[in-house]
Amino acid sequence: MSQARTRGELHGYQPRRVKDEMRANLLRKLDQGEELFPGIVGYEDSVTPQIVNAVLSRHNFILLGLRGQAKSRILRALTSLLDEEIPVIAGCEINDDPVQPICRACRLLVQEKGDATPIVWLARARRYVEKLATPDVTIADIIGDIDPIKAARGGLALSDELTIHYGLLPRAHRGIFALNELPDLAAKIQVGLFNIMQEGDIQVKGYPVRLPLDICLVFTANPEDYTARGKIITPLKDRIGSEIRTHYPVAREEGLAITRQEAWWSRDGAGTIVLPKFVAEIVEEIAFQARQDKKIDKRSGVSQRMPITCLENVISNAERRARGAREKKTVARVTDVYAAMTSLTGKFELEYEGEVHGADQVARELIRRAVGVVFQQQFADADLERIVKWFELGGSLKVPGDAPAARLLEEFRKIQGLVESTAALGLKPKDDAAELAAGCEFILEGLHAHRRISRSEERGFFAEERPRPEPPSRPEGPGPRSRRSYQ
Ligand SMILES: [Zn+2]
Image (cartoon, rainbow, N blue to C red; front, side, top):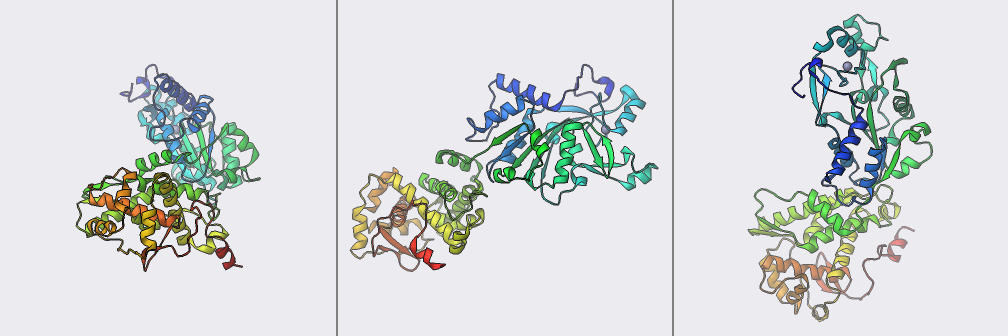
């Protein structure tokens, strides 16, 4: 059928409402046991079933969630529920159905040409229209405007429907219109949206235009903005069939799976890149720590993009270091996580207490706590007393962050029991120097995170002067001292 070039060649074609089309394709996918949203991890038992229900119900729906919860991605994936291609009247600005045109120009065309009306085929990717709502979005942007040039050219009255320059919504006719951050849309435009959903009527510059658009409307919003009184006009809210809450990964493993999938890894000319599991876990744990940190604004959330960009920077720093040291193999270390702080500080909004400390200190503290948590899991049963003792007996170790692995390992070997302790990470003393060095460094960083040894820029690692057995995974920062600092 997609060979058809005119209306008359569309034998057996039946127009179908877009929500019926999505429903039918979804049912077929369900029957065939197809994966519905490939690449979307951790929503299988929570968000996905609710979206399925909304589509089966032929609802307009809204995804409520914080930033970086794959909301836009899910909405874009809805195009997979559309037909591969549909016939539209050639030249129509709003993808009119050849059998049921709604715009005035097409209705006139079909009247004149009948079955000879030319058609083209529209691929499903082009039936998805997306817009970020901001307070300065106008009716003209979304719905349309009178185009005086069109009017002059055609010798038409301004109120004639043929003089309309269509906005985004009519252009999404027979498709999906996604509006992100709905509460930021001015009330006036919300009313316009409501009228379209309710009556198929729009008003352009005060002229009523009947345009029975067929659109699946989907929205996103921050949950607090959405529920705040007066942000969404009640009749519009009433017409949104389903409210679906998204969430951050529940378990670190899920977060890791997303980060591994999204982060940029396979790089040209990078040689072999080794990302030890503990480094990946630390990066992911930073996001988990940040999401529960009182110094960070919970309302705006901590996006999954934080661990993704952080991991990319970790690998880049390792890459840079390996280049400088002329090493063929790039092994990421905890040092690289600290060096990736630039990818963290912009990813959260600070509460007042956080602002007092500054983003850098908050980020550094997050890394330290993440190191502490992952370290605790890996080394819960390990006896690391010998290593702590070495420092208490006056040992200290300072190596530049960019030191080659072999040089670093040489230093680490001086500390009794350190290299052997990497066995808890699955390493053996004869293993690759770079991997052993990364493991040893993790142990020292872990001991530092638990305040069993100290570390400073100037001195490197040395004995903790006043041992404090506090666990580092406390949700709160340094405590009394910092509180005093701003009184
Ligand atoms: Zn048309």
